[in-house]
Length: 130
Image (cartoon, rainbow, N blue to C red; front, side):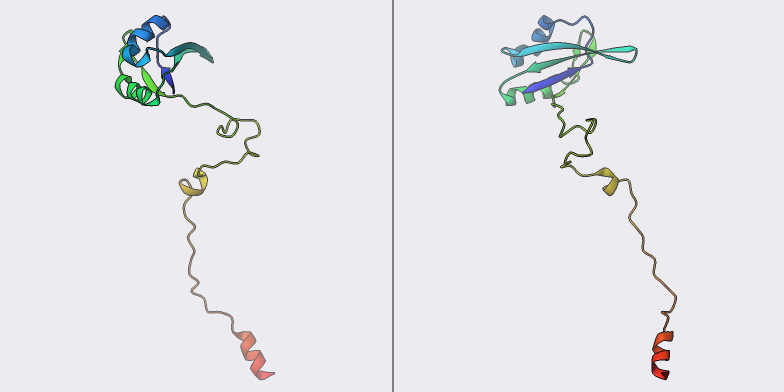
């Protein structure tokens, strides 16, 4: 199972991550990343831990712990693909298996008003006369 590690410092190394994960990441593979958004730089890492039970235990125990004086956050890594990413170029043509918010949460239910006016019965009276 792959784990996404965010909020790490710029000077972090793989050796320090291995020491931080300790018994959870003995045979783990780490990859450090540097992402740039506008004028800011964001550092994160990805670790692959097997078996899945051990990875979930690591997320539970190590989430929020400090690494180099900064609390890190851990979560399961999610791959982005065309069928689960609304930012794709042709997302309107793809099937979306999840619930649409705009139909459920944001829109108010339609209120139907009762009509207090009597129904037009002129046709019935004309039919009787004619």
